[in-house]
Image (cartoon, rainbow, N blue to C red):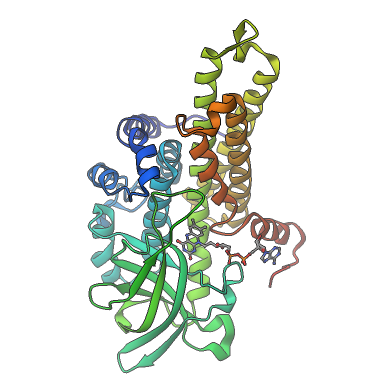
Length: 384
Ligand SMILES: Cc1cc2nc3c(=O)[nH]c(=O)nc-3n(C[C@H](O)[C@H](O)[C@H](O)COP(=O)(O)OP(=O)(O)OC[C@H]3O[C@@H](n4cnc5c(N)ncnc54)[C@H](O)[C@@H]3O)c2cc1C
């Protein structure tokens, strides 16, 4: 077992963290206040390759391994989780899913444009009445000659209003239950649909979350992703990939909470000494450090399996569950260390705390991760 990063991974670590400190972190508070989508940041990330890290170079990506992918995602999550969410959807839910399940033509048409940021993608699984139990999707797809007619509503779709390409799941044969679910790529220019941005979010305010309104949207069969009826399988594979990215981003949030806390605790004085010199404050920081390092190792273990190309659903769920939970605790400790100042956006920790909450909800709630992990442990599928 080798715990050292390779030379290339170390270089990516330096590049990603310097970029995040220089180009992402400084504008995070203003974007959050204004609920402004980070177009400016994405434009700077694209030429470096960060919009297509793990995608092979022949399809326009950087071709980096999954540990490097986690390193980039952690660095971006450390600076701004709204940017990290946008990126997680772009790469892990959309690009990697097209790479895995797309035809050669679909890959050649869409991946280079997604990697360059010419096209932003979104992933439409969740519906107003259906989240965790994705087997019961209500959106429908009806065959009409060489096309499909899609109807339904999707909600909470990250990038939904800004995307030019939507990966959407709809049931082509409701009588077959989840075995009718089919995946479609929708080119918004050629198959227009409406979207409605959601406002008033607790966190991730500069990311876009939208409803997709699919009313008789005509999609050519050539835009179907994978076989008819394989959509549920494709969605679960996509979430496996997305959860890895969420976990890495959560480690970045926890690291940001540590960095902010150490900086504050070493300069703020109480009772005649820096608050960092009080043992109870050190305990808060030590807990954050231990849990963050453990979460990072869980992410790297899942990444190691992904690099080998073997199944990693169990390890990815463990990493996502743990990193999501500890990021919340770390951000909470950080507010405690900042005292009253932690309650204001003068310091980044209140945004970190608000942004961290969603890790326990999206891409499978904490309860759903526990059911997946429990299934591997017991052999009994509690949600099957
Ligand atoms: C900011 C944000 C961005 C998002 N981005 C996307 C996106 O890009 N694409 C997309 O498709 N979706 C997206 N989502 C949706 C997200 O994935 C869902 O909210 C999530 O899967 C939970 O579904 P739900 O909200 O319908 O909750 P429900 O499924 O209704 O669950 C409600 C509660 O019941 C619990 N519960 C449900 N079933 C069980 C069970 N069997 N056992 C124990 N507890 C259970 C859940 O854990 C949860 O606590 C996003 C959500 C948010 C908030």
